[in-house]
Every structure is written in structure tokens, then in C-alpha cells.
Image (cartoon, rainbow, N blue to C red; front, side, top):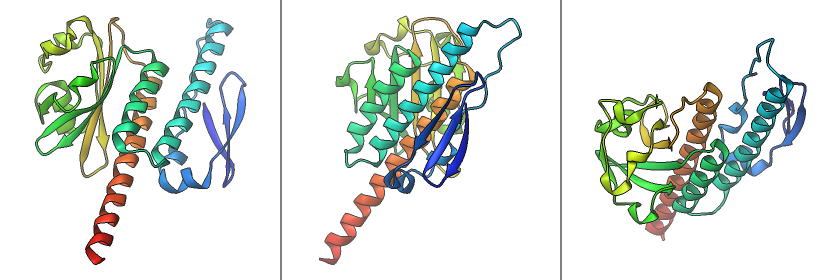
Length: 233
């Protein structure tokens, strides 16, 4: 799906199959979400023997991904607290990509801590802590590079949490939430099936990670402004 800006307020989205649609950005979203304009999907090429139904299925998936990104952009720019935003994000990503689990970890000192989950017991939020550099998630937090595995438990970096009953999950995508200077957290996807995450799925998660980063920084700025106002009062 290619994105072509028509004017400051509209983007024309065109799929390789010929489908096109227009999306409108609100001023609020444009202001607080600097990554919005960068969100575009690369065209997905079908082989000559590819069937039309596969093309249409892929076009439909891209269309739904765009809708999900718009919804998450609205959450980012809302006045919801960060935990609530993250919880909504995990649910939407899990539904969109049809994965069993979506977890978001946020960095606290030399650890990343489970901050939101779809698929695991919410009681583990704030209790699952992983040292930076420990396991797959800790490695991603340390290196700032994503890891995609079809059999995560066979990777030497894998760390098992018995309380999460992770033995039933196979595939894993772990993606850093951060900028060029710092990693703020990690978003993980898990499936019970053995599969590889496609390039367009990884790209979709990269946009989600940028939106999460925006939500984090925006709320940090709000908190800092409040403290400054209280101190000067």
C-alpha cells in the first residue's frame, strides 16, 4: 500500500491491486504523532501465478492495518493514561496480526517490566521483570534490533517463565520501542503455530512501536509540565 499526500490534510492510499482510498488526518493527530506521515506500506508483489483472491485478501489486510493505525494514533493523542493506551494497543495488534499473545515491556533502570498484555494473565503486569541483555526480550532492549523466530524456545537466548506457560508458544517477534539514542521498551508477539513473520507484518509492528514511543514521550512531557507548574505555584 502506497501513501501519496494530496494536501496537508489528506493522504491517498493505493494498493498494488488497484484499490485506493483517502484518509484524513486531524490536526490533533498531526501535532502529537510525528510518525504518522511516515506510515506507508510498501507494495506487495504477487507472482505471475498468484491468484486474484490472494491479492484481494492482502489488500483487505492492508486496509485493516491502516484502520488499526488510525485508531492507535487516536489513542496516542487522547488523554488516556499510558497503561490504558498500552492495553488497548496490545489487543488491537493481537487481533490485527492474529497472534496468540502481544506484550509490551517498558524499561525501568536495568530491567524491562511487563506493562500491558493480551493473551497472558493481567495479574503478571508489573511482576514479570527481565534484565537488560537477558533472554530474547532483554537482548532486543540492549541492542535495539528486532528478533524474529519461528521456534523461539530453540534459540539459545530464550528465557522460560513457567508461570506464563510459554511452552505452548512457538513463533516470536520481539521489536524495540525506542529512538536513535535510547530504548524505552519492547513489544513482543507470540503464536502457538510455527510460522515466520512476513516483512509487511514486521513493518506494521515497527510503526506500532513508533506510536508507542510517541505515547510515552507525550505523557512524559505532560508530567514534566505539571511538575514545573506545581513547583512555580
